[in-house]
Length: 118
Length: 118
DNA sequence: CAGCATCCCCACTGATACTG
DNA sequence: CAGTATCAGTGGGGATGCTG
Image 1 (spheres, rainbow over the protein chains, first blue to last red):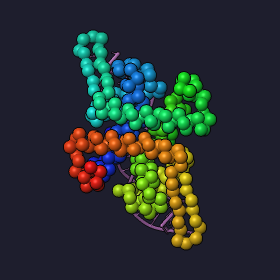
Image 2: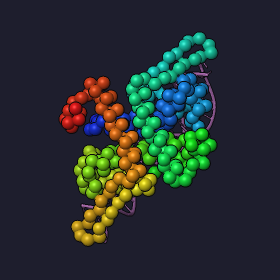
Image 3: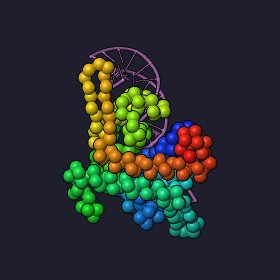
Image 4: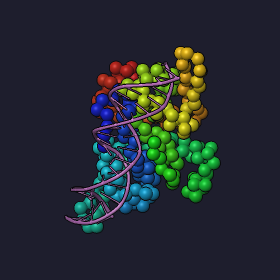
C-alpha cells in the first residue's frame, strides 16, 4: 500500500489508513465480534481471502490490529482491535451513521431494513 | 470515480465518498473558511487544480458540497458544505484527532508543532 | 483453517497545455 | 480566476491456484 512520504496534516495520516476499500468494514466487523479469518470472511460481503489478509496485514502495520496465533492443528489465529483501532472505530461508527442518513434521505431504506438497521 | 453498484452496508456508502485522496482535506478546508478554488488550492498542500476540481465535482454529485457562480469578470465561484457535508465533517474531525494522537504516540509532534496543532 | 505467489486490469492520480 | 482536454504511469484490487 502506497502512503504519502510526508504528512503535512494529521488528517492525511488517518486517511491513508482508512482509504483501503475493505478497511472500515474489517474494523467494524472486528469490533462486532468476528475475530478469525473465516468469520471475517463470512461476515464481509464480497471480500476475497487475499484482500482480507492483505488489509489485515496493513492494519497490523499501522498498529490498529493485533493478532494471536496457535501453532497446533487446526490452525487458529485471532485478530482484534488495539486501543488505537478502537479509537478509529469511533470515526467509523460515525461514517456508518452518516451512511444510514444518506440512504434514508435518498429513499434507499430497503437495504437498511433488510439488515435490521432501521 | 468508481463506486460499488450495490451497497450491502451503509459504511460502504460513506467510504466511497471519503476514499478519494483529497476529499477529507477539501471538506476540512471548506469548513475552515476556504471557499474559492484559488483559496482551496492555496490551503491544500500539493494538490493540483485538476484534482481539486475533480474532487469538488464528485463531492457536488454526492450532495456534500454546493456551489454558487457569478458570471461577471473576474470569475468568482464559491463552494460550501451542505448539511450533509457538515455532518460528514464531524467524522473527518475525528479522523483528524486520531491522526494527531497517532503522530504523538509515534513521536512525530514536530509537524504538529509547526502547524500550531499542539 | 490460515496464508502466500502470480498475473492482469483498470481507475486514480498527476503533468501539461489550452479556453472563457 | 475558473475550468476543460489529453495523455501517461502506477498501484490497488481481484481471480486463481498452491502450501503447511
